[in-house]
Image (cartoon, rainbow, N blue to C red):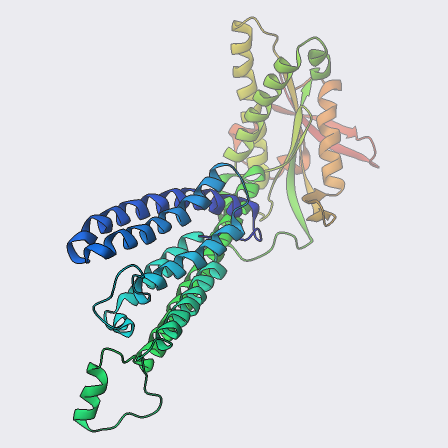
Length: 440
């Protein structure tokens, strides 16, 4: 068995490598079990003088499986070792089926060994090569079977008395019978046929392994892309995006609802706490915020320290984008309020969040360079949403919403508690903006 190539996705490579180590152990156990059975069977069918000889050769099959297994256990390189040992395996098979026991006088001429169809043993090793998950290794085993078998046949042809008929054989039935029944005759046509089958079987299996590897890598790519999408989009949207062909990287303009949420006074809070407590609190806040976004089918654009930026209407716009953004804002504040009650009960300091929501035109697409890409939503509407969130401090409220959002929300339950605060100047933007705030 062979080490998989390091080409392809790293997660797929690691998975195949780990599976290969398991296969090396299973392959060793399978060989030991199989050879133990054969070793018990041999004395009943082989002449006494051949038993020890065959036992020694069979022990060699255990050694060739044990060496790569031990190297893998010790985290040593074993890729080229298994290629070399594959040659040894095929050579041992060839010796078993073509070379007579040198310590015993054979009852038949050497060529007679080709009459027992024992060359099927090669197929076991060619088939087992697929568990190395390398098409090249499968082809290598097929080539080694062809090479060693050819050498074995060549050795038999060099033995005294052995002969083969090259070219056509007479149609005379008596002469034909004399040739085929002669124990010194080797059927070269049958030899060529077996070699072709070695090549054909190894080629088919190598193609199957190549297809399997491609499937593993494609599946790993898809799962990684789906996991990346789930970091930003709700699970439902992530699944839909992963299944469609249209690329998200295409730049386009689109009206979306933008939500910014930030934790008020978190910097001061963090200065008086241990790093572990700060990070634990931050993770709780991010979890609450992300859950609210995803539950309302929003996109988590990015974490901003102790806050987030989320969009509703990316990657695909819907008629209720503004309503879902406002519903998310109210759910987020409600969840933080419940979280604070638990904190107070535990003797911890409550934390307040400020949320700003706006609706407007944005530009969407990939930004970054070839080393790191990020899907970005940018534009004046994003800047305005950020400024609106900052205005929750000066307006002493938890939620500020632009009139562009409110004009698109008809659900009275979502509008309850939100009161217009008139025209307000927004830093960095000319003119004024009609805003609404949540009454305490």
